[in-house]
Amino acid sequence: MSQLSVQHLLGIKHINKADIDLVFKTADHFKEVINRPIKKVPSLRDITIANLFFENSTRTKLSFELAEKRLSADVINFSASQSSVKKGETLIDTANNILSMKVDIIVMRHPNVGACDFLSKHVNAKIVNAGDGTHEHPTQALLDSYSIREKLGSVEGKKVVIVGDILHSRVALSNIYALKLQGAEVKVCGPKTLIPKYIESLGVQVESDIKKALEWCDVANVLRVQSERMDINYFPSTREYAQLFGINKKLLDSLGKKIIIMHPGPINRGVEITSDVADADQSIILNQVENGVAIRMAVIYLLAQQVERN
Amino acid sequence: MSKKTLLNSKEIHIILHRLACQLIEKHHDFSNTALIGIQPRGIYLANRLVAILQKDYNISSVKLGQLDITFYRDDFRRRGAPLEANKTHIDFIVEDKNVVFIDDVLFSGRSIRAALTAIQSFGRPADIELLVLIDRRFSRHLPIQPDYRGRQVDVINEEKVTVNWEEKDGKDAVYIINK
Image (cartoon, rainbow over all chains, first blue to last red; front, side, top):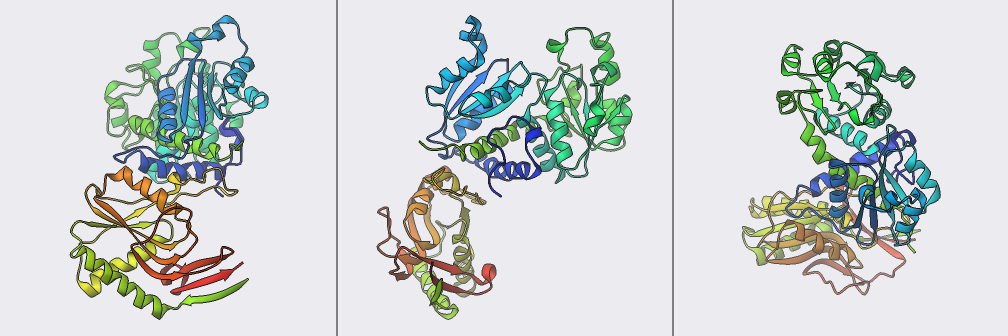
């Protein structure tokens, strides 16, 4: 098995365990590559990739761009804020115009759920979802699991709690799918208003007490409070959120075991996580960023294998 | 499918010792030399040669690396089957070293072309030589020739030369297989 079962990476929901294993195995090789004196391989010399970001992003965009360049692909970038989307162009028109310039792979982030799914049905290119609204962010989930695997040896049987704004988080949904596929136990913890109503149908448990959740877990993946997606007030104040669900050093030290702290970034220091926790040795936040490049190289390399030559 | 034995284990044993001696003739104490086995099958030959150098000739400080060329190949997306990578393990800098590539069979020369590109990621070697166990004559696509060869053979393109190693395949032998 050395080929993905899918043509596009739209979400973890569409892939299987063998795909995840293949991505991890390939990423192992690329992690070795990006730690060499010369961090580049010529594999994708004849592939052109468009990064379409209809929503703000720093880390993901840089990480994808770096991954593509490390594979020697040609890269074009596009941000919605400085483009004809502002002038009323539709998504398909934008994509088709870019495809006319002979692009093989599109990496897209979009504020609307299902935008990548839609695009994959209408344009002739491989699509990688870099986050669609509150739906999925598959490469983030892959790099999170990869970081757990790197730190703990495997994901199977591990206990992971996802803390915070589950309702608005594509990272949470993709992570739940990925962790369940690999046989991990998953709990979510956050204010009742930020936990989706039918979350249990995904096979996860809900815990409202942060201390109990942390005592149970091996890994805590702490999410950012996504104020920009909140149309109403889901909790009384940031201060109250920090007191009830924020993770600080005192809380961690009271656990009697050393759990791993993860965060997909960007961090609101002092809200969901305090500075001393973010910078503690049990936090693998910066390892996640490094692994992100290797994982994205693997995903793009594997999808590029399926690009037909003309 | 017919299978013909080209070399048996005794012949391979003699050839390996000759190749080791030829390396010593050129590289003396190996202080500035790095042997690089080409993945996936060249690493067995490289390991054997290092073992002979250590055991029979008391040269213990041989630098040995493994180089995977998958990401440097020129047939990405041009073959039916996807390419699968192997591990690269080079824990030294090849800058200004005398590098010897080691592979089991030299056929089109394309793997070695890829290896020449790949090794640049680890520095600029002083020079690069090529050692192969089997040199298939008249089959080259590129102007690449070995500096040390175990045995030169003429085989037609439909035939495949496979090298078996005791530690991997249970027995040392080289076969010509007619598909």
